Length: 301
Ligand code: 3HC
Image (cartoon, rainbow, N blue to C red; front, side):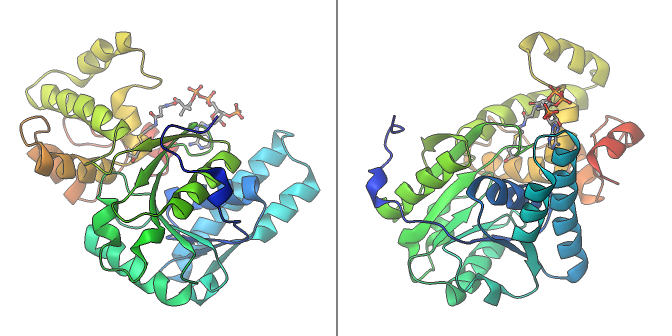
């Protein structure tokens, strides 16, 4: 069944190579998902070799885990690893027909990235953004071909969570949107078309909850009490653990976008902003120390 508002499938273009801008945790999870489900070459780019090696290394390690669990054969694992490569230059995107960015959550950075990508790809290649909260229309605004830009918003952990928010920008055309839905289906995600509004739908709801929980902790409620009180809501993991999984810096960026749009509903916590400014990762705790166990689990530190 065609998702509500999705254009005719027949308009979708075939995707034979994927580019991923960035090689961080989200980007490398995306590289793995695209390689596994589309079975096409996926090339990651980033600013330095160390980041690239880390991103490709993460994807390869996850492939080894799938092999270890008996989900894929050794041949399949080797094939998948060969599909995922890294490049320091965007020349590698020349023949890519779908490029997704998962770089720093800042409008000017993302606009610059898309302008650079546009220099290398064909005018029909789709440019997708995994932004958590920024306007897709604004991101596309300075491009020669804004009609090929779509929002393609995944949730952590990408391999496990089924939802994909697809965002139509003001100028996105039917072919780009149809391709986005076709790719989403190939990725085996449950696609929903959402409005290009601040933080779309999921983060709008989630951040409202997180903002309230952070505020109660800032006001002096012990974190254990806040976590216990949230338990009846039936969340799959405790809110502060989820924050560690998503990354406090990303949570803060989304909160800032929402604060800009709806200041009363999304207050900013100065203490939380300080925690992020100090470059801390892992779980946000009221005394601003790190939970060593969480750091270990989520690779922070
Ligand atoms: N990466 C890859 N796979 C993972 C993983 C990870 N980080 N964490 C768990 N998994 C896999 C496990 O390997 C396991 O797979 P298997 O069945 O093939 O062995 C499967 O997920 C289930 O894991 P577990 O049995 O260990 O644990 P749970 O059943 O408790 O599920 C969870 C773990 C899926 C992470 C669950 O706790 C959950 O859904 N948490 C909430 C996540 C969430 O809300 N994410 C949205 C955040 S918002 C966001 O990302 C948007 C951004 O814009 C901010």
